Amino acid sequence: MINKKVANVADALKGVEDGMTFMLGGFGLCGIPENAIDELVQLGIKDITCISNNAGVDDFGLGLLLQKHQIKKMISSYVGENDEFERQMLSGELEVELTPQGTLAEKCRAAQAGFPAFYTPAGYGTEVAEGKETREFDGKMYVLEPAFKADFAFVKAWKGDEAGNLIFKGTARNFNPCMCGAATITVAEVEELLPAGSLDPNQIHIPGIFVQRIFQGRKYEKRIEQRTVRQKA
Amino acid sequence: MLDKNGIAKRIAKEVKDGYYVNLGIGIPTLVANFVRDDISVEFQSENGVLGMGPFPFEGEEDADIINAGKQTITTLPGASFFDSATSFGMIRGQHVHLTILGAMEVAENGDIANWKIPGKMVKGMGGAMDLVASAENIIVAMMHTNRDGDSKLLKRCTLPLTGVGCVTKIVTNLAVLEVTDQGFKLLERAPGVSVEEIKNATEGRLVVDGDVPEMRI
Image (tube, rainbow over all chains, first blue to last red; front, side, top):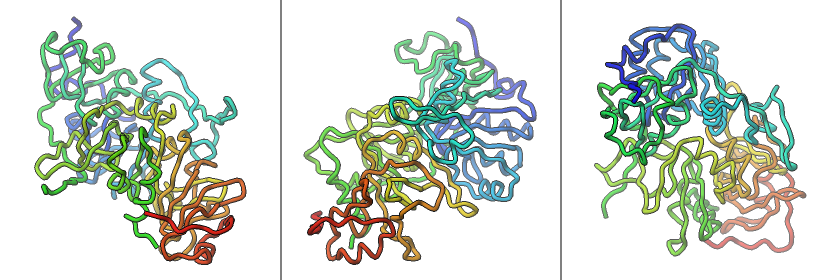
């Protein structure tokens, strides 16, 4: 067993620097690497590029990094829930590259799987395809999209073991598995970190080979963005 | 004239037995409430769930189980969770049978715009560009005109496009229309709405072929 366990979030984030590119898992606030984000805020590093489907809300998730003007550029598919984000974008302080959600996921997966680029129909004929190579296959048009390149991927899983194997829960899975192994260093934080041998190898979602560092998060707020319920009849 | 629930109710008739269906945010989400319960349908949410159920009972919300609108949801027997790349593999690979989404504008050639108003509103396209570029059966749910009374069914879209030539059907508060080579073909009128009213609210080419029936919902 190759042990990927590190003692805490500070050790897990060793080597992060100004100007780096980070991938961050999560959909909305669901399944975000809360502990890694808190540490990035504490470290105060600047001019970072974040690849993340969303940009958090004003006071949680990536919104915390936006508030302190640590982010230079965001690569996302949907950013509708964050006023500070919109303000920084419209004023030109923040560079934004909006990418179709499926393309965003596949650009991560391509980096993970060793593909330099791929063709997708998403965005053909729209401003997303401007300046990009297009090609026809079987009478349909496709856009060439390059794989992402990133220095760190920060992902969050439900359970993990010391070998770096990960299991996700519910829709908190989302982009997290796609980002594992898609950056130079993948840092996984988990709600529960177990000794190797504790997880059933049949149930592993992401094998430890895609993870360089794993730690148990200190706490998880797991904030709900839209609490929708029905009444008991 | 239909309200939002009426539009959703009419679209629910397009959902057939054995369909996997992706519902967008807004009116499309309401469609799930009106699908007949004697047919088998699974709803997909692109953040990674198939077999979406109703909202949870109060106190049973789980922050780890949400839909693409970030709302807390439940799952039904037979449901599954998966990652975002797999989710869009289902969509791009045309395994999802029907996509229902909202729009700001639709053009008579099937172009759709629903993600950006330059200088004013930039929320992003989310999964819409992947969905419209891949799905074979795309129904748009929207109001026929905007708040200023301007038509949303146009000759050409004026806003940045989400996809080209992809919309197959449109259900509005006034009508059901099909996108054809000749333009918007009027299939049904909403209860109490005349062909004349629909003509006046449609900027793009409207094809009226014989008597247009009133929709049954």
